[in-house]
Image (tube, rainbow, N blue to C red; front, side):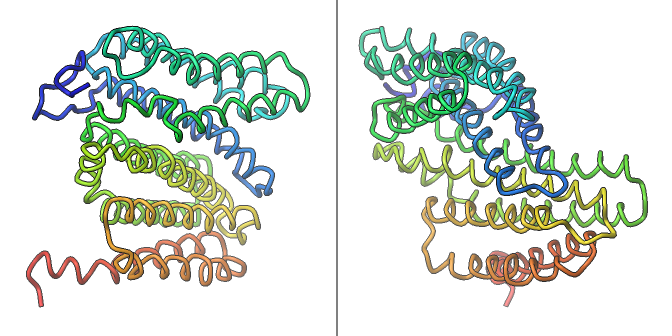
Amino acid sequence: MSNATRPGAAPRGQETRANWFELFFDLVFVATLYVMAHELRGDPSPADFGAFLVLFFPAWWGWVNLMMTVNVFGPANPRALAMLVAAMPGFGLMAAASPEGLGDRAWAYALGAAWVRLAYLPLWWGRARNSGALLSPWQPLLYGLLPGMLWAVSAAVPGAGRFVLWAVAVGLELLLLTTGGGLSGAFGAMSVGHLVERVGLFVVIALGESVLTTVTTLADSFTLASGTAALAGFATVTVLAGNYYLRSSPGAARILDLAERTQAAGTIRDSVMFLPFLLLSGVAVLAAALGTTVTEPQDTLPPGALWALCGGLLAFHTANAALFLRHGHEPRALASWYPLCLVLNLGVLYPVGLVLPAWATVAAAALLNGGQLWFTARPRWKRRHGRP
């Protein structure tokens, strides 16, 4: 189905743009992300990191499918906006349950996940029943209804059986999407500009939430050392924003437009679904480490917080590098900056963090990553501005 024939879509040649209501919805979801990451404050264990990823991915996948739905049906479509309203409480329930999301509140988390998936089902079911639809009628039932029911049923299943159902539900969604049995048939009807804008704006909101974390923590620990740590955290987040919008954002619209025209669903899927999950997970983990730093700036970071700092930076840069390649850049261009990120954040920052106080470690993170950005982007900046 062409862009011109989608209900609520922009006319051909006119790109669909995100509207204020979608941004409001993203604010609700990013709050879900940071409530889930709050458990990584202090000295998180490997199990804590694993729990965060297990709880965040189903929520992220729900957001992705809601974004896809709005994209296909059109941001001006009242039914799409009503769907977002209906889904918001589901995310709120998942967030509220996440502190014990694998324990006493797992049932509530499961009901929230079911809620989100059933919110977008009616639109796809109605579209699939129309003649000339993008999908067969069985696809939204398998991709939306069945996982939603598995999540709902798991709320009543005790013990490990509940998590087996979670794994089946998530695995089914991933299998159907990657094999073309899910909603991937709608990729050809999507507005590329809207996809790029939604993901880019969400990254902005997530980075901004990291700054908010440092400021609110500083309000509770108002000392000179905490203020220095908060300033260093702000500088680190600013450098990451520069890395993202210099490395992976340019060329995104071009390569996704090409993917849309050539039916390269894998490129679109990786660029707006899988890789942003890794990038945003890194941002959220980093924010938790910054919160710990501002709270206890004069002590060395606990081992878990140091891993959160270094691991969050590495996850961000790795996702950014993969997006860089997915958006059509040559691997040799990647070699000019990504290996340096690995060396600085793992080979330099981690040993430094073992001996320096927390505020100095985060200051080192800002200096190392800022220096890397300046050093590797300087030749490109000179060429753009005609400097020798």
